[in-house]
Image (cartoon, rainbow, N blue to C red):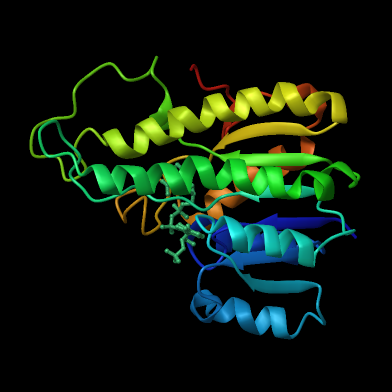
Length: 239
Ligand SMILES: NC(=O)c1ccc[n+]([C@@H]2O[C@H](COP(=O)([O-])OP(=O)(O)OC[C@H]3O[C@@H](n4cnc5c(N)ncnc54)[C@H](OP(=O)(O)O)[C@@H]3O)[C@@H](O)[C@H]2O)c1
C-alpha cells in the first residue's frame, strides 16, 4: 500500500488531499499543528485501523520534524506532500512591511519545506514512487507579475507570500537536480485559486474541484517531471 505524508492536513487543500488519498486506498500520514482541529477527518482516521493517521507537526519546529522522521524510521513515504503554508498579515504593500511576519512566512513556506524534505529523504528514496510535491502558487511567477494591484485591494501586492513561493520554486528546482540521481522527483504544484481560509471565499475553485483536478496529474508524475512547476490543468507556469 503506497504512503503519502501531508503537512497542514487539518483543513483546506491539505485536508482535501488527505481525504482523497485515503479514499483511494493509500496509507495517509496526515500531519498538522493541532490534531484536534482535524474535525470529521479524525473519525475517518479512527475507523481506518491505523491506515490513516493524524500526527502533530509544526513545520517551523525542526526538532519535532526530526523526531517525527525518526519515529517513522525504516518506513517508506511514496509522496511527501509539502502543503502547509501561510500568507501573512494583509494588505502587504510598500511602506507597511511587517518584517517579523515576513520571516515567519519564509520559515513556514520555504524553510519548512526544505527541512521536511531533508528529514524525510531516506523515507522517500526507499519508496516505490519517490515523489516530493511542493505546493507553490501561481502568484510566485515573476514573468506573470506585470500590473500593480489596484489601490485598496484587501491583499495588496502580497510581497511576503509571493516572495516566499518564488524562493520555494528555486529551492525546489535545486532540490530536484540534487535528488534526481537518487531517483527522487521533486515537482511543484499550483493548485489554482481555491476557496480556503488562505484563498478566500471569492476564489474560483472548491477544494474538491482542485483536488479532483490535481490528483490524477500528481499520480502520473515521474522522474521526467522533476524540477517542473505545473498548474492544476497541467500547464507549466513561467518562472
Ligand atoms: N487556496 C489557494 O487559492 C491557494 C493557491 C495557491 C497555493 N496555495 C497553497 O496551498 C497550500 C494550502 O493552503 P490552503 O489554501 O489549503 O490554506 P489553509 O486552508 O489556510 O491551510 C493552510 C494549512 O497550512 C497549515 N500550516 C500553517 N502553518 C503551519 C505550520 N507552521 N506547521 C504546520 N502546518 C501549518 C495550516 O494549519 P493551521 O490550521 O494550524 O493554521 C493549514 O492546515 C499552501 O501552501 C498555499 O500557499 C493555496
